[in-house]
Image (cartoon, rainbow, N blue to C red; front, side, top):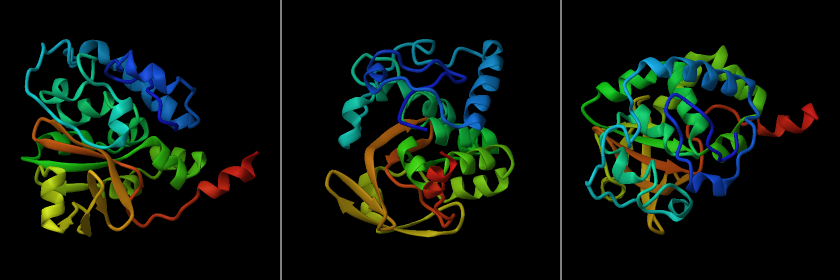
Length: 230
């Protein structure tokens, strides 16, 4: 679960993500979910940014990680995701493969798309790797989907809020009922005195997506268990 793009239901951006390197997925469950979803995509309407035409809506994303994510005229650039549903947009942000797989595994895609407005605090693949062992992620994706759904709801706030709005609010409530303190941090925000936005203010349908560098919620850390499997 490194910050790489993997094949999914919608083709990933081909150019900028090559700079991140392509490595095989370490989680069997993550690979399986990607493969299964990829098999069904041929019957769906083309949901790629290119398939929906050129979007001229200007979108400014901010944060240190934005420099290595699709930009300009590249497929998956922020402006091209404006017309996507939240779950579709997630597939075009190459550092969110684990979070996007979790959205699919838990059936959260419809909930995110149907909402009048949501803010998604999406942890990077590296954030998941730092929090959970590969075996733990596999278990969450394949067996403990209700627990995983609860974890995802810790990362979703009602209403589409820019990072500036989040900082101005000071406190926001997640779908899980947790209150998160928000404070300014560099060019973005620090959430729950734990996670910081590293590429904020993606827009997708009625949602805002802020990429963050830590996993929120109270599930135990299991990443340290990884070394015992080698």
